[in-house]
Amino acid sequence: MKKLFALLAVVIANLQLFAQPWQPIISNKIADKYIPAHYQDIGGLLGYRMNVNLEKRLLQIDSATLLSGFRKRPGSQTWIGEHVGKFLFSASKTYAYTHDARIKHLMDDMVRKYIVCQMPDGYLGTYLLKDRWTEWDVWAHKYAIIGLLNYYSVTGYKPALQTAERAADLICRTFGDEPGKRDLMVAGEHNGLAPGSILESMVDLYRYTGNKRYLDFCNYIFRAFEQPTGPKIISQLEKYGDVTKVGDAKAYEMLSCFLGILKYYKLTGQEKYLTLLQTAWKDITKNRLYITGTSSDNEIFREPGILRAENKDKMGEGCVTVTWIQFNLQLLQITGEPKYAEEMERSVYNHLLAAENPQTGCVSYYTALQGAKPYRCDQGFSCCLSSVPRGISLIPEMMGGKIKGAFTVLMYENGEAKATIRTKDNASINVTLKSETKFPLDGRVDFIITTSRAAMFTINFRVPEWAENFTAKTGNEVFHGKKGQFLAINRKWSPGDHLAITFDMPLQVIPGGISYPNSVAFKRGPQILAVDQGLNPGLTTLSIVVYTKTNKPLIDAKAMLPSDWDWKEAYSIEMKVNNSLRKVVMVPFSEAGQKSAEIAVWVNK
View 1 (cartoon, rainbow, N blue to C red):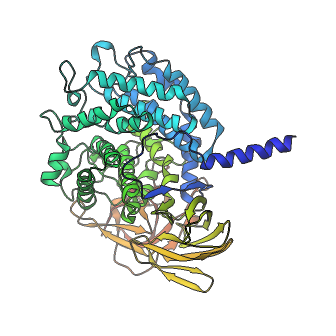
View 2 (view 1 turned 120 degrees about the vertical axis):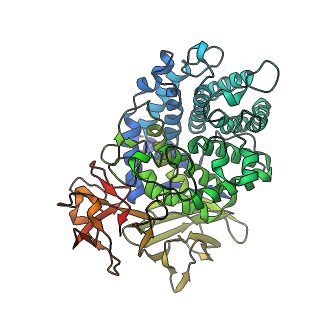
View 3 (view 1 turned 90 degrees about the vertical axis):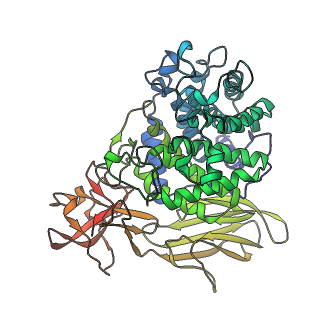
């Protein structure tokens, strides 16, 4: 009997991987072209860091700290109310991938304690009545609704949805352009960008409930954006195509509004909104994006090419990194275009992972390219310490899935992905892709394709911009990919087919641009490398390291890493130190500085 129960448990767990019983009830007019697959057992660097995020960050969260501002109003900070919603987002995404009972228990407990903190009128903030709607109240309600909806989506716990509705109903009763209602744009910071970002929550809630009140409020937000007190998102992008002209150029809050606008576009099909945000994306990638896949200097978008990277510049806010990833993920879902996956990969393998210490799970608010990473371990007091885990929890949704019906691999890691696809003869079959690789240590990925029967269908493989000689082989067939495109392999696949992908990752030397004209950085595959002073004995300061052009390859230097440095990836390259040539050890920026040493991405030339 015990064996029978154990077998049933396995069957139920497998069914859960495919089941999404608590979906929105209102369909979008614009169907997603990219639908993430169900990934299991992600390994390699990404799997390792996802486990760090679970074990050393999320499972260490203290609900009493996050709930303190609700239990005893006012909270110790004006924005302390955002953290519960952010945690529920991270925990829900992590549970959807892992089905880990510990994170389920923690978020169950959090939700039940959170719900009883709601006031009779629906208020779910941390302010006293006299101070409501003055700074970050609406913002906190945005994250409350996001967190509760994500929790509902993986558990079906109806009180969570009802709590989100009561909070949204209060917002709808309080704000609007009807007589007697408040102006939403002045109920928060940054020229209305912060309170206006509740657009995302309202779109989601409308889709989950079908309550037209929430759609009407979305339409009000668009009117409010363009009123004298608003950030003029639409009109300024139409006129200038420049994100620094929107509101006060605050990057995190603006990108948060972009997420809501894209969801509204999918819901309504109003094409101009997609066109405008693609214009914003082009402006950011061309003029304001660091090589590590983040943006912002002192939390705002700066002039074209100004990308200062010291700790004093407060660059690379973690919240910006995560919201930029979400922006690209939504654009990928809408368009299916590989350029958005390219940007997600850049951000994930570099700035996102760099912002969480793999040894401690502590997080840096800003993660500079030059200097020691200022990791912190507190909870409930810093927006980025709650945001960075959200980004890491999204990794399984970025690995691959169906694009326009074809199974598509986006990131190259160990793992197993499952999806149901249509064959050439329009039959529906289940497909599993299992990948084995040491990437990013080397450029070989082996796939085993499992299908219920032999059938003709296409599998797409993203060819990264950094990859050279991208080749796929199965049996006697050889396929060659072009950078920045999908390699579409359309053939008759049989159960147990093997396919091997190989590519080269030559060292790229990147000029420092306007901000670092006398410096260079180094990139291998998707990873930006950094000099870590702690791994280079005798290196008294990083300013004495000088790169001289060389054709010598990188040399494996993982033997130089400390025993407790878990991800074993390091390289040495010959540089001048005090005018003498010596081998300098470099590691991925994502791993550098985990022992509080000074690091440098930009090296003198």
